[in-house]
Amino acid sequence: MEFDVTFLTGWCGALLVLAAFYVTVVKAWDPGSGRYLGVSNIAAGLLIVNAALNEAYPFLVVNAALVVVTVYTLVRKGLPKWR
Image (cartoon, rainbow, N blue to C red):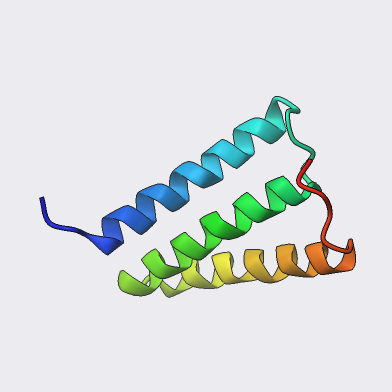
């Protein structure tokens, strides 16, 4: 099987978004925690790469906005602990 960056970034990003959503719904993580915001940023970064490769610019903008908001929140909170 050939290495496919588009496939890998899309599925890894999507699975991370779903995992982060799940752990907040079951209240295992606080949505304002560094852990959640960090995983969310990684997922959004992967999906930004995927959107760029697929020329899906609206999706790219949505994920870029997510990164901006989460980075701003992390900085404003003084880089919260990973709990």
